[in-house]
Length: 318
Length: 254
Ligand SMILES: Cc1cc2nc3c(=O)[nH]c(=O)nc-3n(C[C@H](O)[C@H](O)[C@H](O)COP(=O)(O)OP(=O)(O)OC[C@H]3O[C@@H](n4cnc5c(N)ncnc54)[C@H](O)[C@@H]3O)c2cc1C
Ligand SMILES: Nc1ncnc2c1ncn2[C@@H]1O[C@H](COP(=O)(O)O)[C@@H](O)[C@H]1O
Image 1 (cartoon, rainbow over the protein chains, first blue to last red):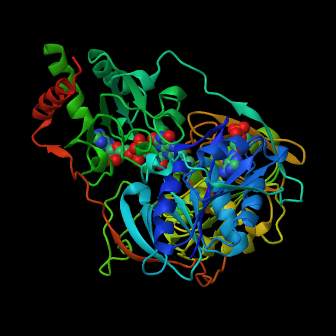
Image 2: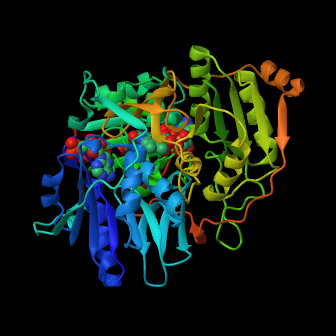
Image 3: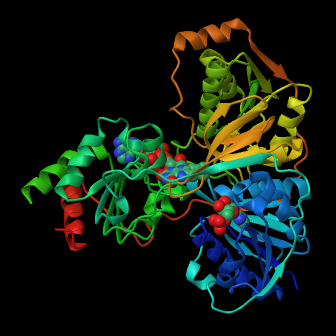
């Protein structure tokens, strides 16, 4: 009769997709343990969001001005108290969840499994995890009968976690007495650039395989010939070779173009999260083991610098 | 502002990963290691902070022997004041065990900031940055993309998603899980690394690996099947280019 607790997250008044994915996973687990799905909702002025969490059986809400913004140590401290009584805890493996999961595990001693894509409860607690940037999949087992699972976004369908049903809502006072040691000074929205990659039909996406800023010109040529735009993986943006609004993935944008052509992108889970629903994914990579080939619809194992001139030729002749 | 940077090597992501005979780990016999890329960003951010606000910079390195010495000498060459190698060849420990080792190495040191990478590709049981903070009972911020040192506090930018960031004022001492430094990690001349090797500034602390208390055990590992459902295009670049154009046209892009 083990309850399954879900840490939900929200930003600017909106629950994230991952929150619903975790509720969907929790429903599956609870069906096997015979327990309930309990969702935690922590913020300020968030009680209204509880209506969207009908996929849970019970929602525990801490609605307190102290949590007007996400507080890394504050949220961890609140959840340490909220999860008591729930042997299985699911936390999004996201920017917010990362600050919560490891802190909960360290202070409570409950084992934590990261990078989970699925969870099993039939023969003890276990999970399947994506390690080494998606290059290795591992089945792991947890000692004991309590566990915290940090789950990758996109592990299941968010739709299955949504429900119009009304869950039991319990409001609890902020259990954290100590003063928060970090203060949020405010949020910053990304600056809009010249191109909105979320509305392009064709994206030519460069990864670290492109090697230098100068080489991006050739990818740009292909994008121009196709009437599309160039986007990039995180390292390309961190290098300053493309603007931040060209980044696809977990900390960038989610895109669903007609065609997504990757050039030297390995396909780390954080990248895949932002592009897996593109209509046609074509991947080019020298490494046949690259995880990008697991999500691509078409793949070519080879060197982008051999391919690019040919591609430009073919498109010009077309 | 005195900083300590925690460094860990990870299997070189460029190499092909082979599995061991038991099928429950990588075959580590011939594996090459490199510095975790996010730790490299943590070091860069610490160097930028030191340049702007002064203070000392210490690097603590844990993991495979040869590579770690090279990594620590490189850190010294880049501007770290002190480099300490923890144990000899303690690679592939759980994050819980790494946390114990780093925390005991930090004992008796004074620091305002601890920086390390936001994650490593093999962190099966949690993030080092947050575990260390929770163990030391000091605040933490993960997914940091920039820091600015103040008096008794540090101002950091944390990234959420969709390009949205938040700024936090955090009491020191604190641990930052660095996603990306404000600028790409710097390169350093080989001659400076050689100087660092000869300077004797690298010290070592003996460490016995602590028993693993993570409670997480790998039963089996596999290389995910790639290209399942994907059609692999054969042939040379010319044939591939032709086929790719065909696929793009068929997808409705004219
Ligand atoms: C909290 C967090 C958030 C993140 N958010 C994002 C995000 O939003 N977006 C994102 O992309 N990443 C994100 N990352 C980073 C992610 O983990 C990976 O590091 C990143 O996606 C890797 O980028 P890459 O594929 O370009 O580089 P690599 O992983 O280095 O891959 C380069 C690839 O190029 C191939 N290659 C090299 N040369 C050639 C050649 N000549 N021809 C063909 N192929 C070649 C290689 O085989 C390799 O597969 C995030 C990480 C964290 C921790
Ligand atoms: N797991 C979480 N549970 C509750 N609140 C969170 C969580 N994570 C973040 N928050 C924060 O709560 C703040 C206030 O919520 P809102 O005004 O609804 O966006 C958000 O900006 C988030 O930063």
